[in-house]
Amino acid sequence: MRALPRLVPLLVCAVCAMCAGCGPVVDLTKGLQITIVNSGWYDVGIVNGQNKLVPSVTFTLKNTSDQSLSTLQVNALFRQINSTDEWGSGFLTAAGSSGLAPGATTTPLTIKSPLGYTGSDQSRQEMLQNSHFVDAKVELFAKYGSTQWVRIGSYPITRQLLPK
Image 1: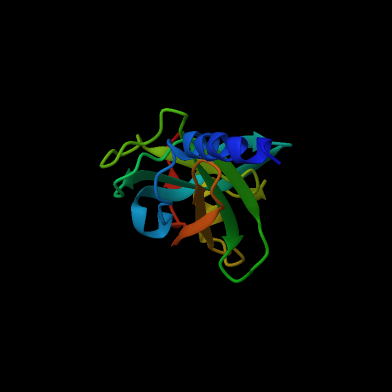
Image 2: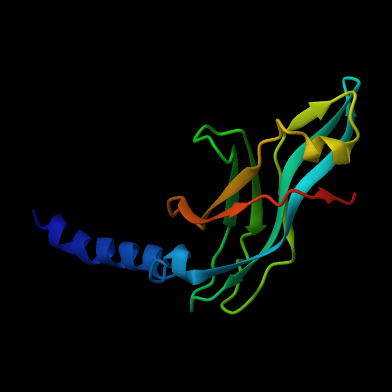
């Protein structure tokens, strides 16, 4: 029983050392400012003999918190506007282990869905004007470090052809 009182200060020191680099948890819905730079339909080119367009979003993230956001990651879920089913998704690391410093803004980040529309007898512009074309939206989720994913916004995909 004498060993236990000696271990308590060591355990307290170990826990404090592990948490020393940990600041308060940042609510990313308030600690990140999202600016949509551009959205639209990216021309993938000819795939299996057909023109292919996929939804794409380009955005920047600004850290409006007072904490550095290390290993900041973003996940994008693309959905057709009239559906709750996932149509496609994309993932990227917005800031590595060095983090996104307070007040800092990322360079423009682009995420494209791997899925989209194909057509063989229409030009890409005609595909966007087709009466069966269904618009899309993107939901952005973010996390940093070991925090949980948080929905940080939902945005429409503009019905425009993006330049390559």
